[in-house]
Amino acid sequence: MSALLLKLSSYLAAAALIFGGGWYAGGLQPKAALARLQAADWQAKAQGEATARKAVEDQLAKAQATSANNSTVIEKLHNENAQIAADHDATLTRVRRLEQLLVLASRAPTPSADVPQAGSGQGTPAAGDPPGAPPIEGLLVAAASECEQTANQLNALIAQISPQL
Image 1 (cartoon, rainbow, N blue to C red):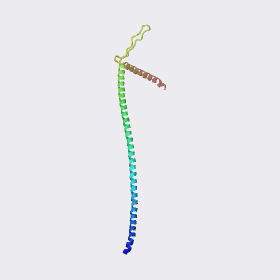
Image 2: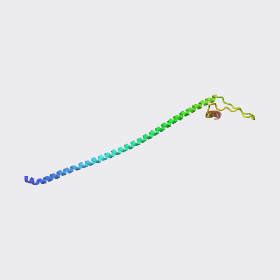
Image 3: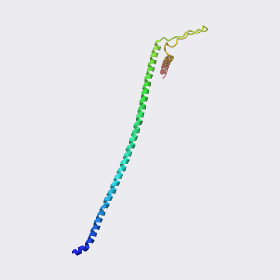
Image 4: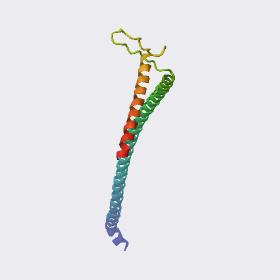
């Protein structure tokens, strides 16, 4: 039996080597496939992260642009609001001055000019603006009194028409 084993030992060694090599080579294919799948997975994750980072950067840029635009608009509105407040104050000052002039005009006696006689020459000149009053204030007082007269005429017309309705 030992002579038979010696003759067959080379064949048995070759068979063991082929069987072991096949076993080893067959085990490499699943490992290589697993390595390829892991590499593809890592690459897909990297692409997904890059896409997400790009989307977040775009959203951040849009938010920064919107914030800058909002700041500009708020500053513009603030300036317009300040200008409106200044105009309002100036208008109130003018209205108060006009009210004062109207009060002064209502207290002062109205100057009456003498009507010239036919052929007798010129009459006495009419009194001008109150001393120290600029011409524009006199015009404002005249305009206010004319408005009052017009309002009185309108009220009289309404009183005449109302019974007819």
